[in-house]
Figure 1: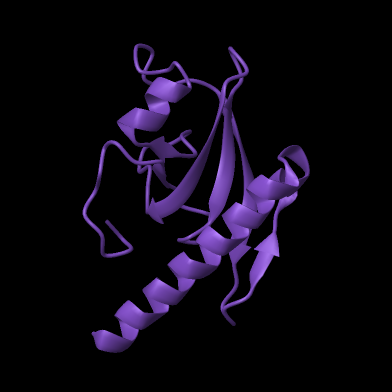
Figure 2: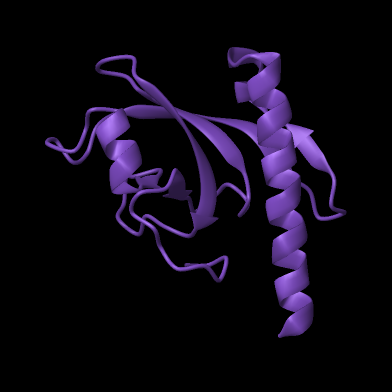
Length: 121
């Protein structure tokens, strides 16, 4: 994957062309209202009209495995910044304070690991 890790189909990861790697976001299936929290760890999708690729585990949580492609909203909760800070996104208003704190910590940790891996290369 773009962040250097191996893809784990049983994780809450996603691929986005526009969100920075390490972003934590809330994805909502618009046909049934189910939601899942994901971490952007890869680039994609590469097909026109698609905004996010999800790991099979997340697709199952959103009840979209059968359809394959469904309409969703993607609301960033925590977005890593180039200076190492974490900026809260629009999705932060839609989740609990505990989820925001966890997303911010996860995003900050992912950004630090990513920066460390670039130094090693």
